[in-house]
Length: 109
Image (cartoon, one colour):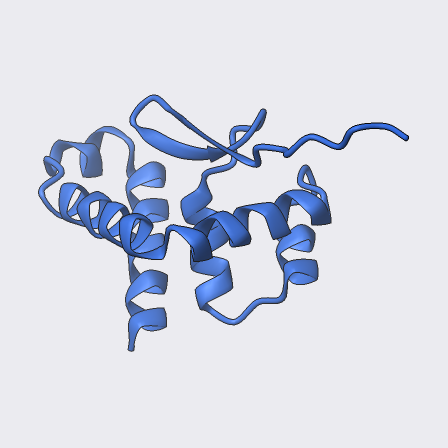
């Protein structure tokens, strides 16, 4: 009989939470989950992830909900005070960030 060890699905690096071993943020998974997307639909949106990783990320969020919600609120506040030069320096990135912000607000409504 082999010994089963616990897996870690989320890692904290560069002041953010990420799906372990990927460049996909926990934020992305949480916002999709809050929108009501199923884990299978989330995998379709992020084909680099496995269903196991998505379930692991959701379980991590649910186990640490108060802390992760506070982290997400802090991230949104930091975005709100982002300097406006980004709008002219990289309009495509700025528009993408604004679309994400609008989607988050729609989820909260």
